[in-house]
Length: 194
Image: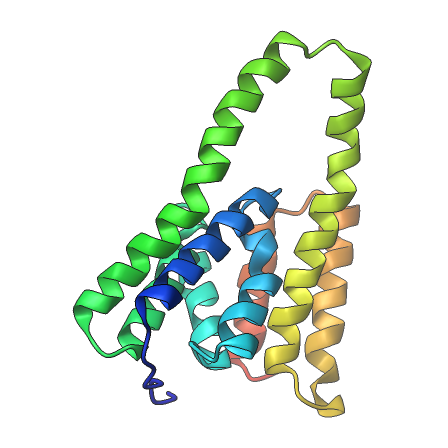
């Protein structure tokens, strides 16, 4: 386990973090997980408020836990606060990131769903729904690339890439439930085959 960072966050930094998550909320078509690449750029690469390991751990733990997948945002905020040095800052991190990611998208979703329901038969509304599918897929693929490249560092990691591609094809072309693929991946990892 990597040691935590020791960072200092000013009030302007907290406000910047909140504002960034407000913007990410409006980009989160397909859920907050679709903006993971931008979160990584902002938190890890630009500000170094999280280590790559902390970032990946937050995503992995939240995705493995029961409940909404947006919990990884709370873990990122928690880790930023812990890196700032206190439990109070960690709670502040959770509040800032979760409020930022939830407030705009929740409000917009509520208002838009009311309007879309009233106008669901319009050609423009149907076209919008069909056009959003490739956008969501593209955002999720970028998330997968960010998470995969953080762990696969060399050409010797080709089995991980091959397994990912095979799982993607199986999901796309068959009706096998995703949990079976997760179980198969866990078994392959347990026996150190990948």
